[in-house]
Length: 477
Picture (spheres, rainbow, N blue to C red):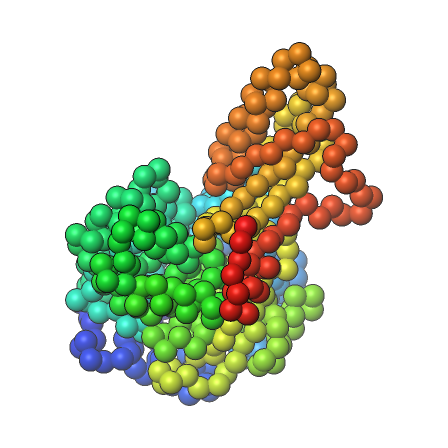
């Protein structure tokens, strides 16, 4: 085995072949364990040699790569968290001490917001970017995409990794990329016009955006099933595509199949959690990124059918490899066969929850502590706030209820415009800090309940919305 793998970029299966790499995708569990272990040993040895970050962390835990004799020995390696990455990058700016390539080898810099004032930075080398393209092309092939398809990419093209990684995968697969983007005022209406004109056969974005796009289309007299041509719609960033009722609504609205995918931006190629065209839950493409499902407290593996947290390990990464990355997501897994013939484990319900306080709004990770950081920096802030996340017209809707202080309350009695100025300031700073718009509601001093215990400041009403949908009802916000 050559590591890191070098893929033939001219290779592509014949269109009628269901697998990109038939042997790897259909091998027995024991054969795959041998392949994973060989890659894991190479990946861990590389990280030990190149990453001061891992050497410090592993030495402190008493781990050495020579201890990796079986796949089960991976549990000797300490868990990696987002906080570990943020702390390391803060102490070793800008990229941290886990950059295993020379700075001049970096061709892309991406990132995500965190709980502190600085973002988490992802650096990707040219060779890794090509391997990401290979992985995503291979997985999208399993979804049923072919070189004859045109893929509309309706996601943010920014530091957010999602749309860019889909784009490079589409290009590697040989399909036509239609990178339309999202998030600009009026862009949805323009998208509807372009979709009627170009008639792409596949859609990528978030489930909420697909449903919002359909609502806007219907308001313009456009029938998404008749006037668009999507045969495959695939998603990440939100759990909606894994919810049966939402999946059925998307498929009924567009007339194409709805496919769920996605793990973490840090773990790109994040599409290694992905459904195939049979849509029986997300396959874990474990020969690219190895996934353990563990108990969130003990980190011990949980048996099939049990709930746990995915812990991810890169097997083909040379720039900033993530080894035993704790996701904080909740899922359950199965090793039962899939009709597609792939022998990977699956997440039959996808990713459906979190074990920490992070929540996702329109594909963006939002932390309550980041909101609090903004508010605490403002002298007019009264010391308490609430975050309400709900669904409105199938789109995530974020409301931040902010208590203002006594000084502002007194000033507003003679100068009421001061309240509106404060509201605008909060709104603008939140948008800059968390990367998503919020409706800011101001309330007088003493309105919000205080507690001596850990404050529960986030109310996520989307759970109620999804429960109503599962029961076949309607949800009104």
